[in-house]
Length: 320
Ligand code: APR
Image 1 (cartoon, protein in one colour):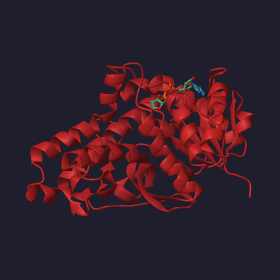
Image 2 (cartoon, helix red, strand yellow):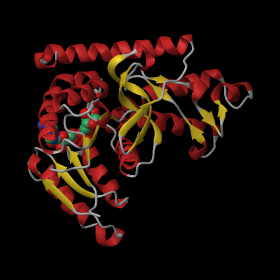
Image 3 (spheres, rainbow, N blue to C red):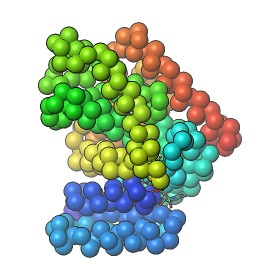
Image 4 (cartoon, rainbow, N blue to C red):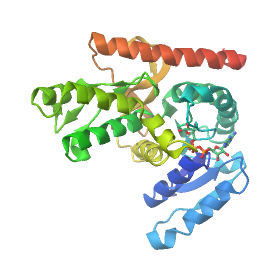
């Protein structure tokens, strides 16, 4: 059987890291696409030349032509601009919306059967626009945010409790922005929910609140340190986890920006929710129970995403 084909649209910091990780995991042959001449070709060659030492088999190429993504099984989109210190994800909207139009049309024309994972920010609005421009089925287009946000939450929790992060599960809902909703009640250490751990004296509510806030600000913390761009190792790793779930039909339960129609009181909207990812793409949206406070936080987050989608429609009336 031929190897799967993975097209990476955008060969910048995240795109290059995605290519490297996909090769190391032998997920398939990889095509890097970018408008910047030489960048995808150079990264593809560089990674290919690490193959003999690492011992992976994956064909690697770089291109400026959408024809070369033909027949891709997976497309991961990072094309666009990242933020700089002082910028919010939302500040990227105007520029990246135009990029989503060209990328969406490129995927529509050359890889309409692909499972598409969008990473470009502001994520929840960009994945919606990308789906609109591409016209692909909703369950085949999703956004990477929840896996990253919960990975950040898990990392901070494991450090606080001094336990392996493998035993920490975390749950983050809502948009990928300041209003994201880390849910303590559904986050556990060895199966014990965080509120119980506060009662058991493992941590205090204040410390937990600070960790939740640090999770919300996780992206900005890295932008502040790097100064010239935004996070790329963990975002790439998170998207690879989703791509692998699709390619291997793992039926993983992963939070992602998915099209929600019916669940959570939403009618046709992209927002971060728990999903099941397998060979069908986003096969299921898991509709969890929320208490009053959680629902209020979720609604606020959804409103923020709705505002961004409205802004997209104003900028590009073809989306209205
Ligand atoms: N088509 C294809 N590639 C494009 C286009 C386009 N229309 N416009 C820009 N690009 C490419 C750039 O040439 C660059 O190589 O997208 C790449 C983006 O890479 P980086 O600037 O290194 O950004 P990166 O850190 O990878 O982040 C990409 O993901 O997390 C988000 O906020 C982040 O929106 C940003 C995206």
